[in-house]
Each structure stands twice: as C-alpha cells, then as structure tokens.
Length: 63
Image 1 (tube, one colour):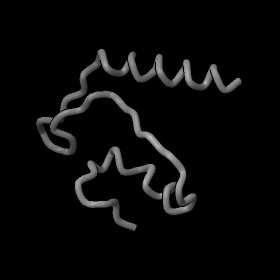
Image 2 (image 1 turned 90 degrees about the vertical axis):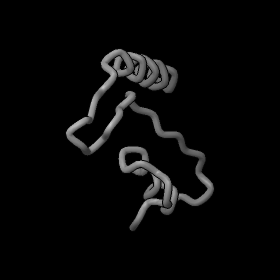
Image 3 (image 1 turned 45 degrees about the horizontal axis):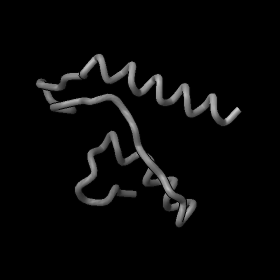
Image 4 (image 1 turned 45 degrees about the vertical axis):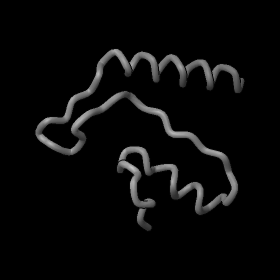
C-alpha cells in the first residue's frame, strides 16, 4: 500500500488506518524533523517535549 503523493513517509503512517476505517478523522503529530532520511537529518529537540506534553494531556483526558 502506497501513501498518497505529497505525504512525507513519517507522516503517512495513519494512511493504513484510514483505509481500514473509511471516513475516520485522523491527525498526525510528531516532533519537528528536517532533512529526514538524509545525512542532513535534524531533530528540533524542543519540539519533542511539546509533542510529549500534547500526547500526555490527550491520553489523560481519555481516562
């Protein structure tokens, strides 16, 4: 199964879920990465904490 054209590989993972559950609303979140899959790949460390905080708050709200 190929992701739609224009999606970055790291952001395309939810695509398979969308095929299994048509019409499901989805989002994809993650830290800021530039130059992915190249020697110039960089991770913005500060963005990891933001994603963690968002995920923790979202999961906490589901309890």
